[in-house]
Image (tube, rainbow, N blue to C red):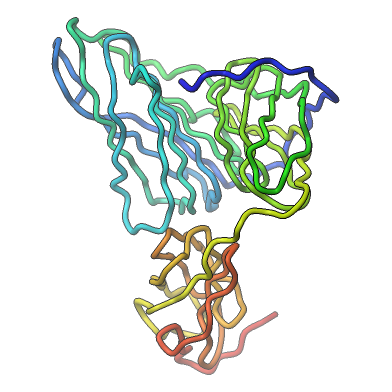
Length: 336
């Protein structure tokens, strides 16, 4: 794993919990696949995450994979389509710990998975493979850990404890990012620090996390996300100018340009610089929005007439254009 930075003096402690997530939001994780069974063997297995509840699970989803001694990974491949998400991963120098960040919307009934490539060393593999998932909107952490034990019991792994923060050493930094923040507490294993909605480069033990602030502006919540839940560590105030904004988004076409006034039509939005965007139909927010760099999935809200479909990101709002117009095909009115 990345080297842990030096300990710095702590200041005002905080253990405030985040606002309660929607009761119907529940993300779970599972493991299955072709595990190496012999010495000098190779294989792969899938880590699958899905919403088991009735509500979308949105924003940053953090995944980790830990391998026992003798097994290593070169990384994971994402196989989920359509590409309405962003996905990044890192592997520790020893090849036994993988961390991934998926940013998108997890719709109930739709699974997402990454395939982890693994190889055994000179001895027959043994021990336990463990995968975790975490999302701040998850209402039930009971299914946030999955494991596979060579020749062992198939009992479900223990539910991780709820994280607690007791101290934060730094609460301000330049808008360009780069400030190292150290957060102490307990139950912080497999944690990820969020500055507002943005994940930080993070390294955590059970009692401390060090994070490098991404760029930002203003005052943003400082949260720690773990498989046992999420906890607010206070706020971080950015000073001076912020980072250079991303390029403005543009919509080049829609998979369908018409649908009933009642809404409910699935519409794929294609374009450029759409990552982390919000889709609107004539100013009304779409349902189930999830945006990757060149693709957004969305469900049209109710409406009438012909409207512009736009995507809003940190780089601005996509301009109105003929290929991005959507026509409601009946004249029924809408409320609100």
